[in-house]
Length: 288
Image (cartoon, rainbow, N blue to C red):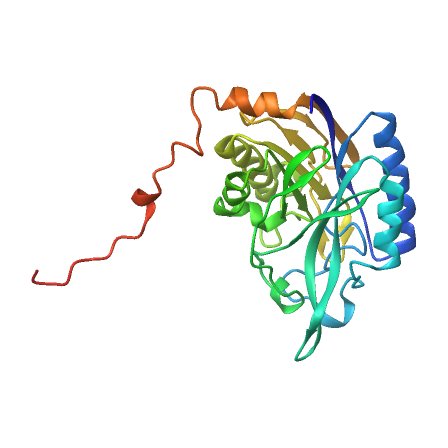
């Protein structure tokens, strides 16, 4: 593919869908001006995130959108040649209590939907609002093979490893990652969740020797204060570009295939795994 300019967005998106689409159009214009070919927006770009993570109000959830909704079609139209990843509350099939909702990440271009991921790992009370996804699948795009994750998914190393094993060389992790709700620091950079957010981004890139693109919400929604800290991380765990806790666009240019190949030239983590050593041991019966 050659040189690819990758953009990771830190921005605040709330419940107002028309306003979100106008804001997205502006961000896309800035990205195009910077020559970005892959743009990764935060989780819950369309409709915002929950306002309380421990006790979410089921009556005040983000608006649910179907994959064929006018809003999604509008994003596809405005994406044009840029590959765009963004988060939204997806209306799924009907269940016994009505439509199931998923916290979903979508990858599109002007050609249509390229990939979809439903968040698998659910923190605190998120399961009171959203159904959980059940898989991690990589997919092909005009800028290479990608994988999607949503914030808490990156806490579990098996998730990005599954995508890397499926051939993804770029992993996009879309977040609405807040500061600690139990031990909040006076300054965001000192918050323990701020440290973990950065730690996971760099570790997951280095573990899997992939390019890692991390976006995040900023600002405040209800009782949640979001961290920002969007970044592009290289296959060696090095941060190539980043934002602060405020809104911004982090842009890095690299030859993804060449950088991934270079990182795996001597030590190739995927090939050097020993799966049999990781299997749980079954204890021998007593007395044998």
